[in-house]
Length: 398
Ligand SMILES: Cc1ncc(COP(=O)(O)O)c(C=O)c1O
Image 1 (cartoon, helix red, strand yellow):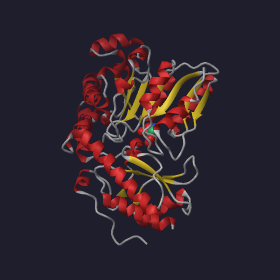
Image 2 (spheres, helix red, strand yellow):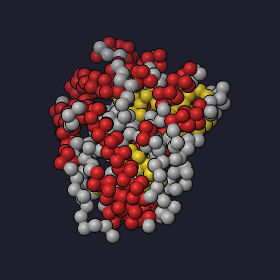
Image 3 (cartoon, protein in one colour):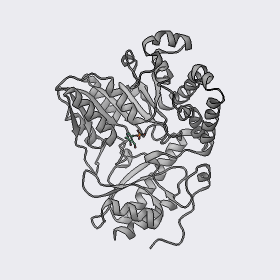
Image 4 (cartoon, rainbow, N blue to C red):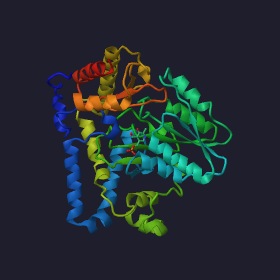
């Protein structure tokens, strides 16, 4: 039976709109946007509504540039190499659509990639008569070398492109992506780096890593409103690079871009038809928020979350009497933990956690078979909440 009261959230949780009766341990799935950023978003929307013509014709461009300039130093790149998309799924799919595959080509990926990205990759391959080759990543994950070797062992002379996560979705593992990108590049293979869990999640050095395409969400760990993601395109890939949706200026891009004084591809991506762009405009505000919410700025936030995640992982593993499935060096602010063999199936555990204990945390099946719980640590969480999770899980799997 759950205790009478759930552990209270810390004072910083007051900045968020999370239901205080829920122990929210799943920042990783959809993020959580703080009140000050939502207020900034409301101001952007008001500005649009005050004079939509002026906004979409004149003001939009410099407002997008404001977000680009704020984000670029956080992810280690130049603002001119960045555009915005709605989410990482769109970022991956946009990159795929700009790659011309031939029949017989192979797209290399891993068994820990995000399902929607894999679905789009398979569909893109199918249309071209190409195939998708998933490198089998182990679970539990012993070390970075194993992850690296498993990926590289599936390279063939038909591999054209790779799709690799920086931090995997269901297992929360920080892959050695920079090493994989570099060594694939040396073999003439381009990489789409899926950094959905990138900005604000783990330190990023986009230019140094030099993937052909890097996409990542701002609405997860950077605290932007939902519908805010970036797509970084390496300069040699920018000529001819197009959004999924062509808009009014598509046939006269150079002239239109000259009018707004900006790179043609920014012009094309910044307006893909009338849309609520307030989440993208709020990326700049989210960068300001994460930079000031803790003394020490964004680095302090990522370090705080990672340290809390490691403590949480220890607490839950101890409560369940299970081993650490991933070495510390491969973890950021998320950790997946395998439930013991006595555990009911994933859906039953998730239901019991939510309905009986008021804990919002994902529980899912893994390639290895046993259900895992994936916890996320964020500044609105406390160690006590993870102790409560450990207690709940122990009672449920008994
Ligand atoms: C690794 C990874 N890639 C892509 C996505 C998709 O993100 P979105 O739903 O914002 O497109 C996720 C979502 O959790 C993810 O974890």
